[in-house]
Length: 398
Image (cartoon, one colour):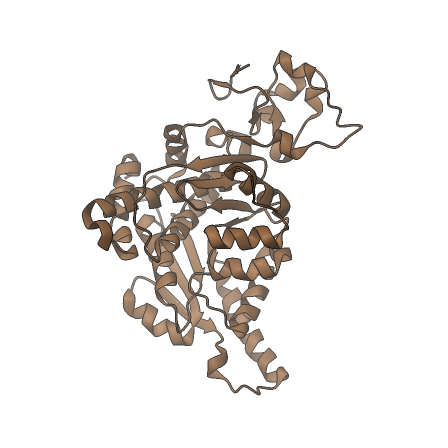
């Protein structure tokens, strides 16, 4: 039986979780027991409605069945677009460089120079002010040649640059020097992308693992994709329980995560799949790429359902990653102004709103590009349409 939610001004399904409602309208205090006791993470609570009193549940005597309380948010795609627009910074001649986002990409090696370029250039095209790339020396000159707009740092070590029998003490000095150079810069960024074009070099992975540990200790916000996901899938403790990161797996990466977390994907709905993995991670936001992108923190799930393109060219995922990272930088600036999480648009968790905004802008740009290029569309064509997509969606903020 649907009831009316005063915060959302819309009917909601019986048992619907409403983000931050108890903090905003004090519904938990208004609700009849035992509903008032059901306070979940991030101030989530059950809406107050008379029928809820029939729930035979007592949190004092038995644990909450988290699966029973997971939910798909009822916001329409139009509503989510309006919420996303609210956090986009208004352009103004009064802004200083960096006010609209400073983003770093850790990725790029001899074999893969396109992916970090696509991710980092997308950040600029979506609207971040500064975009840096941290890569191996073999990739740096190539990436610099793609665009003078990117600031490129050749700080990642590459085992092909050293003797196979390099002594451990010398290897450690190389690691320390590399990590020190990267850490010096990382303090300055709002958001850090990890993974595009990173490759599988062990020396690179060693430094990146230590960098992730440092970022977690210093509460930095991360977006992990591609080889970054490969690293965390093999080292789950790097992100387990950490709420300031977003994982963006494609179909194969999602399956590897599920296997590592011992989650059986058979005979489960897409919502159950993404929520169970997010619950096991217990912190990171999960973006399951697909025909529609599932975005879940384990407690609630939303979908980005824009048309996108029928083409699946290499690099499109990197474009989405860059768009998400930029939206996350904007969210953090918005969060500094608003302070109270309960006042976020739609009551959505900040990272969830950032992920939806990034997915949406990437889909709109892909749709516009596909309309022109059809089967010949490539990732660079999608980046070329980002400006048009942003004007279409965020024109009122320019």
